[in-house]
Length: 217
Image (cartoon, rainbow, N blue to C red; front, side, top):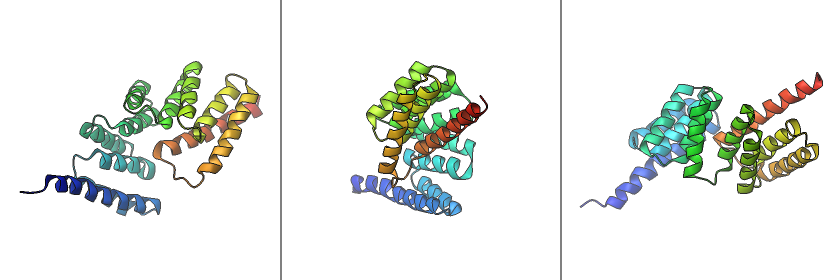
């Protein structure tokens, strides 16, 4: 009689190896080889949510394939309805690329219910609330993100921008920016995740826009 535990290990370990191969190829710019590896992982384990999530993140970040990424995140949550990071990633794309705020917030809210300890998801939701003008809610989300992860640079940057532009709290903003700089030094050797990378680029664009507006004010 076959060993069922061995089969389960095989079903996870082998696709994980291909995911790792895909990640390595992606990091050095071998995108075609990376995609082949992710495809292979899914071919081996077509119900493995993690494989779809990694391929979806890769498709967006490296290929600019928005619809392909959304489809992979859809598949990830279909395979595992409790897979928080896939909801968070889909919510990010729905917000950033599709402009579908209600659907984005629904995904982010569910991601938080499933995993209330992910600082990046609170920060993403906070910046949506910031852009909607719900400053109190945005500030609360940034505060929660920092409480969960006191070294999360993007949360300090986003909260500093809010304090600077919306609350006119210059001292508070400078404190947050200083903390972001200190935290950045601590994290400088840490590889950014999909969402974390987006949050950092969003902050750079938002703060640049604010500086441009101030220079003409």
